[in-house]
Length: 117
Image 1 (cartoon, rainbow, N blue to C red):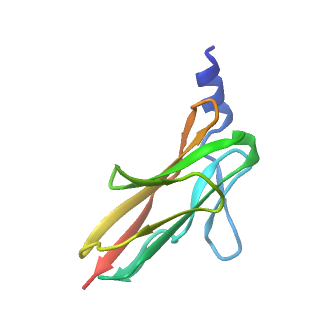
Image 2: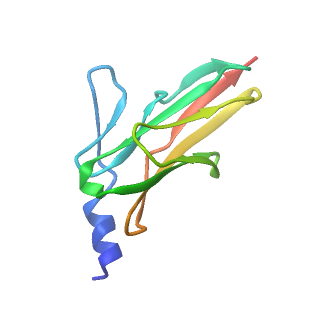
Image 3: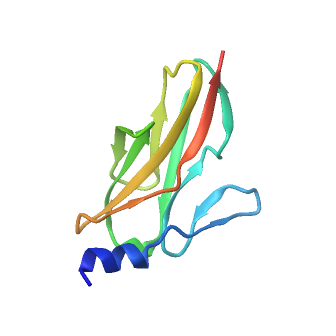
């Protein structure tokens, strides 16, 4: 079994919800902790995306931020944040990818947000 496959098995996408129903990374994962899934914003809003990863992923090199599958930014230090601006009305799928020092990448569960006029 390759080291990469073993790593992927060990860091499987297991998540837990906190008391306020926000997704939190489990002991072996990465997650968008804000905004919550199915959030609604008005056009012109600044959307702050906050992501977290557990220590089991090792030292992170960066957290990459994606909108509809396209990388829009990265952050190299905790707390991992990215600001989205100028989104037109519609539905958007947000996700993050944690990249550790060895270059292994771990995907989050996606979060859907809607922008209304």
